[in-house]
Structures are given as structure tokens and as C-alpha cells.
Length: 129
Image 1 (tube, rainbow, N blue to C red):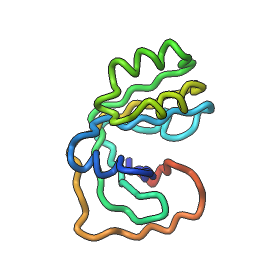
Image 2: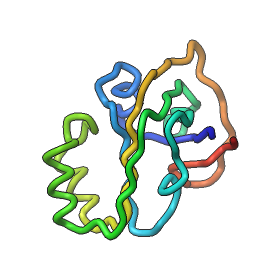
Image 3: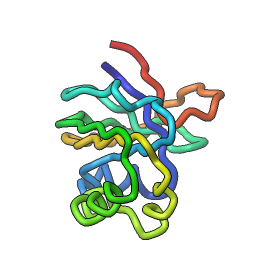
């Protein structure tokens, strides 16, 4: 399956250079990518307001439901470095109920930015099989 993930800040660059090896998506409601990503899926990396600049493959994925503050504390200890996130990130995610942890492999930077017409605010789009 192919996915389009939208990013802000330096997350894409950190993925492409191999510094960020896990992508996480936290949500209050059960929304994509929760339950829709699997090993070997392909994720296209799109800058918010820009084009697709690369892709990465899924090495593994873990899903968590009814997350809570205890889970957040554990995740902070185990995954902060691989997620490349700061304290502000954890503060913003403390009300999440659903978590997708996507382990990444084989990042590839595209030579040219690929335009993709997307007109909604979804941060994750399931493209196809």
C-alpha cells in the first residue's frame, strides 16, 4: 500500500538523513494511519504546503489504543531519540488515545520535488494498494 504523509519542520530532512527512524502519529480519534499501515508499505514524504520530496518504506508498525499518560511517559523514555522530538511534542500529545509507531527504512530523496494536488487538511492520506 502507498501512503502520503504530510510533515512540518525538519522531520522530512531527519528521515532522509537517517536520524529519524520512527514516525509517530498520535490522535484522540481512530484516524489514518492508525490500523492502515503495514510492513513494506511505501510512504511518500510531503512538506506541508509543498511537494513530495522523497519516500521511505515501513520496516514495522505498532498500534496502541487507550494510550493515557502512563503510556506517554514510557514512550518518551524508549523512543524520543528515534522520533527526533522535543519536550513540546510530548506536551501536545498528552491527550492522545491512539498511537501509530511506524518504524522506517530505506529513505530516498527525490531529485526533483513532485507536485501533488491536495486540498484538505488531512495529515495522512492512504493512496492505494
